[in-house]
Image (cartoon, rainbow, N blue to C red; front, side, top):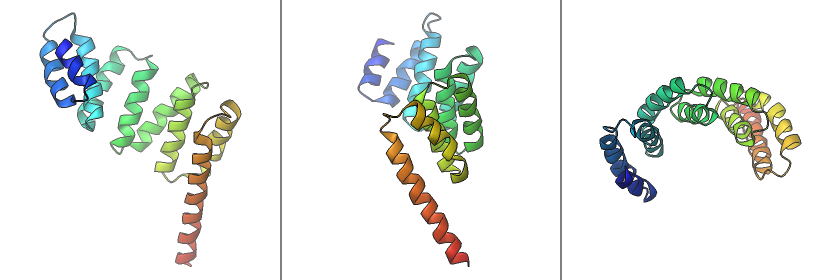
Length: 157
């Protein structure tokens, strides 16, 4: 596992995967290695393998918000936007004070091109986290998306 951790720190994730897999032979290290494998798969954009691992981890620890958030992120990047949205909605309900969950939820709404729903979570973000550097970025992205939609409507007419 120590060798795997070194490769992980060097961002040589494919080599880390190889050594974490070998280290899983140890019962004491199995779950720690399994978690690190999930991270390595995500960091190498191996979404299906990452999702498979995070699903197992979530079943093992269903209340772990970090695992849930990782799973939602992976599902979004793997094209399972609706499932990711549902997970983020659950996380926001459980942890309304978590800025990252709220910002990621807004990102999911952008993926869906669901500009109509963005106003409410954006308002919550402004109220709870007025110092967030992402507020201006989100507002600009929303403005651009609304302008695109307006231009597309004009072209259709």
